[in-house]
Length: 332
Image (tube, rainbow, N blue to C red; front, side, top):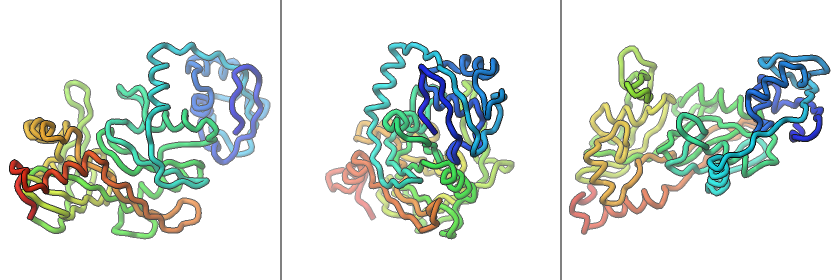
């Protein structure tokens, strides 16, 4: 799709990347800096046209449609918006894999995947600003703000829809059409079982403050996580978590319910232990999306991508294994 001009009328042909989207959503993405209220005004006044005719804001664009977009009034950027824009441009997002349909990045901890809910910007906003030439770029799935690691994005709408279908299917123990998502997670406590399947249904709820949380409940949605023991110390255990379903906060809630909270988890963790861990050098949640296997959304070839542990997490594991670290004991 042709880039929007703020000073002249644009006529552009809708491709497969834009087909199926609501008209207003496409205009919000294309007309950066234009107030939403103004976008709605120009659509309802008939200045935006599809195939020469007026169109409702909810109209689903079709491949082959010709879209007319008039000049748009851009809102002046506030100092806060300017600071946010600078932060977006400086956000470092290592690229793990990229082709014409797919982008895979290594998301750092402490950054949301998208803006909203108190976040001024996220990974998707940063990538769009860093790649102004990109015709299409959308998140294929989510990672918690506190979680680091592998994040997939679609660069074509057809690829994005295929990725969405794949993630909806969930993990099927390596089935060819599903994603095999693995995390490394450090928990408080001595985990004894080499392999454990955890099937505990989860339900979302709101705190009195309005904050979203998740808990185990009989009437919740089915959730299945497979845990494998990687290493163990006197007070901590390193696990690999394989997601067979993709519920919100699934790994964190399953582990907390079992009495093995994730080290550094500020929502579901052991808060006294977290304060001690911060003094010892772990200042974030120890949950990292380190590996994924999945069929490529275009040609179906099996993909395998890994993201190494961030330096801060690797250093903390070294501390646990150091003989001088008597507070934590030796690995067994």
